[in-house]
Every structure is written in structure tokens, then in C-alpha cells.
Amino acid sequence: MKFFLDTANVDEIREWNATGMLDGVTTNPSLILKSGRDIKETLAEICEIVEGDVSGEVAATDYEQMLKEGRTLAAIAKNICIKLPITLDGVRACKTLVDEGFKTNMTLCFSPNQALLVAKAGATYVSPFIGRVDDMASDGMALIEDIRTIFDNYSFETQILAASIRTANHVKDCALAGADVATMPPSTITQLVKHPLTDKGLADFLSDWEKTGQTIS
Image 1 (cartoon, helix red, strand yellow):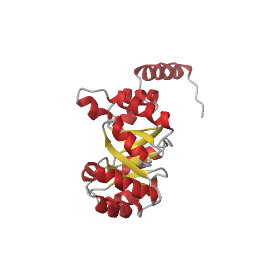
Image 2: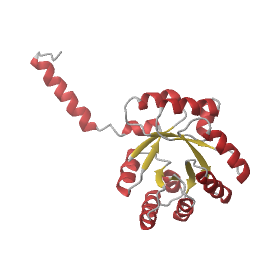
Image 3: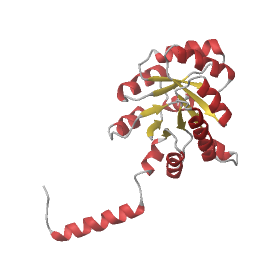
Image 4: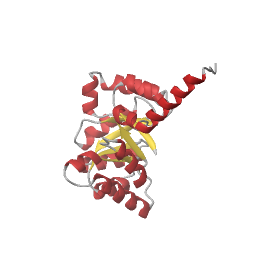
């Protein structure tokens, strides 16, 4: 499973990219607002750091303007993935942009039917929002499982990019359900390495090593 970082914070992206664990980045208007920076400058800097796909989202809601903004974003760097909302205009724009050779990430997915539609449009990624589905007293992970089944049934190449991930368990469950990508904030990806027994075991080893009086270097 690929790991994407869901942030527009360049310093955090640079830090995680240095670990070799980062496969891409997703941004959205809310994250750009939080960064306080110009969207094109921010995306250009992120694309210089990360080799994988970097999602930049359009702000338009009508077909023609989506195309204009999508092409503008794609011109920033070769690894830009145009992010579009799953609306009728968004799906139509997705098909056009895909036919022009651009990568697309269809966002705000909350149903298997939406995922099926964008897969037929040839989207590179579809982004089901797990946490937000859970907030509606439904099952976000069941959404991932249903989409996986549908895509496998028809050999769709669209990748499932699990979004709105809030916990380490979400990541584990997405991996078990067969999501292709998990995008998460830095705070969540940091949780993946942590376990209290690891901390305890390391403390015990270090204590015993100190008692040996030895050095390795």
C-alpha cells in the first residue's frame, strides 16, 4: 500500500520524504488555507520534493472552468494529479482530462456508485472519505471493501485512495481491505511506528547494555 501525506506543510513533507516511506501528497483548499501560502508556489515546491503524485484541487464547480483550472495546475509539474469533486461536471471534466493524458483524483467519494462512475471515467484515483462516513453513523471501512469488490469484478485500474484517515487502526483496516493508497496527516503516520511494548523493550535493552560497560563505535 502506498503512503501519501495529507498536508500542504512543506517542512513536514520534506521531513517524511527523507524517510523513504512517502509515495505522494494530497492537498485540498482547506490545507492550502492552513498553509497561508499561494497554491501554485506551494504545489511547485512539493513536486520538487516528492517524486510521486501530488494532488492539487480545482476550486471551480462548472465543467469549463474545471478544465481551465485543471490544465493550469497540471502545468506546474509533471507529477501533479488534478483533484476534482465527484459531481456531474466533475466526472465529465475527469473524462476529458484523462483523454488529454492527465492524472486525476476524484474526491469526496461517499458511495460505491460514485466510485463506479469515476472508474468508468478513467480516473487515476478515487478518494473515499472513511472518517466522514463514520461520522454519519455509517461504516467507512465497508465503503472501501465494497469499492474494492466492484473494481476487482470489472478489472478497473482506478486506485482506491483512502482519505479522511484519523487513526492507525484506519490504516491497518484499509490495508486489510485492499486500498491501494492511504493518505493521512503527519500525526497519523507517526502513530504507525509507535507501540508501548516497543518502547518498553528498547528501554530494557538499553539498560542492560549500559550495564555491560561496552561501546560499539
